[in-house]
Length: 324
Image 1 (cartoon, rainbow, N blue to C red):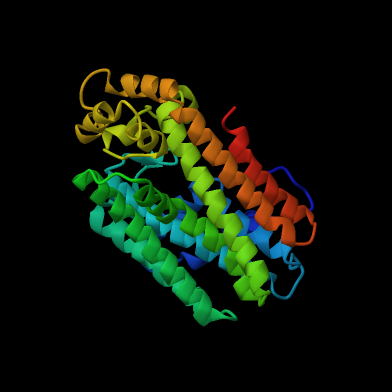
Image 2: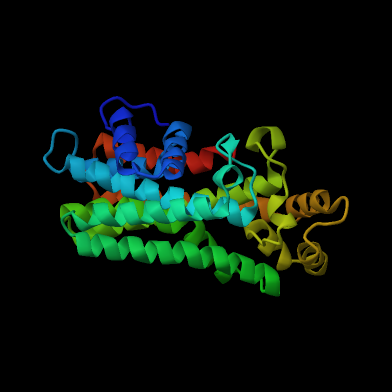
């Protein structure tokens, strides 16, 4: 979490509102909602929403601030619903240090609870100014998230690797939601098209840089730092940017074989790490992350200088810092 004092970030009031929206007459749904609130997390996406609204001149005390809070809640609900579904798809054991919901309650309860969150956010959006446009934007983003996840499986199944597919996948998995989180306040507040587009560009490029950084760390990171075994993407047949760059080099055949057998042989991950370093794929990936982070930061140049804008800038540049 960014250490600032004079801008509003998701706090106890946000958590209380999130809990209110998740209330249900059904105990199992309530328990999953309680787990979501208790687990917390960084709340990065609603934080972007609150910061974007403040960068547009609307903050605590404004008559529109409760709607901004609700918009942040909607962003978090869409994110949380996708995580409930992802954990089931990935057969994950834990989420944020807790037992995954489908492990605890079963598949049906987990999936329907995710759908409950989607229904709740639609209800909130319906009562907002620009509710029709916001509902359309959230619907489009939800579609992109689904398409990104399915495309990832399709590419692995067909071994149809390529940069265009990769960018579409990571946009769906990550950047579509950060883009929505950043630009939705402009829609809510009736800001100019230029401001909306500036924030959309920030959110999209920030999300792409963030996911590229995660993909880089999955291959080049250390298990005790990233909190999971390295090489997970290779074992799932996922061609991330460093791997795609190697597929365009002299070791393409070997790299493709490792991907297609999902790094099943001993030493496969270590060999790919070695090739990624020697080929320059890691450094080229780092440079692409720098480019995306700078684009995100530069997109904010058209907004007035405020502390909220400065915090958004710091989020973008943190992706560069994470590489050191």
